[in-house]
Amino acid sequence: MMKILLVEDDWTIVENLTAVLKAEGFSVRAVSGQREALEAVEGESFDLLLLDVSLKDGNGFAVCSAVKALVDVPVIFLTASGDEFSVVTGLELGAEDYISKPFRPRELVSRIRSVLRRCGRSQAVLEVEDLKVDTVRALVTKAGQEVLLSALEYRLLLFFLNHKGMVLTRNQLLEEIWDAAGEFVNDNTLTVYIKRLREKIETDSQNPRVIRTIRGMGYKLGD
Image 1 (cartoon, rainbow, N blue to C red):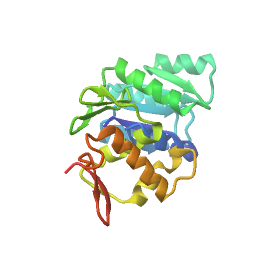
Image 2 (tube, rainbow, N blue to C red):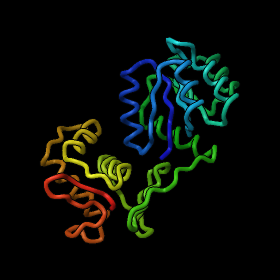
Image 3 (tube, helix red, strand yellow):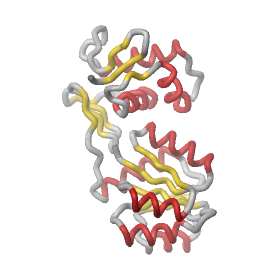
Image 4 (tube, rainbow, N blue to C red):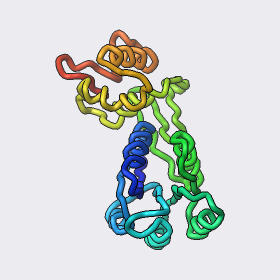
């Protein structure tokens, strides 16, 4: 799973962006300032950094400069200012891209994937049975043939894949897909989504081998 460090001190943005990125198959760690960011980079490996320019503790430019001196990791700036100075400064410090706030989450995800491809940081394809999911390209295939999923079906599948071998309760699944649905999601709706997902990814949806029902507990992907 590709790991992103999000350096942002607006926790409303952090919560919303983290939910979007996790839904797209990324692992996210969020910190709010320069000191925390540098400590995180020194202690962990990340595939990409998302840096806000304005931080309560330090600033994104200083973080970018320090990080680039430590490790070779791509950086995308998030900035409320689209002025030429901020853009040029960020790029001269070695950032791969920038995006101005307010941004559309899907556009940001697309830019992240583009930067990861350019920098040669490709996500290992997630696999189970004859199903493969390339989270960088958001491509799902079964026995080599593309499977078309809705956004919510894709998010549900990724949640299962990221918790392979674990029994997931219906409440856990409902909490995961709630923000992405754009409509009220209840227990009955969840049953419908799982049924539709199985019809698309299982060889025999009546006898599922990918997403199995664990009676009295929930669902489980894999052994």
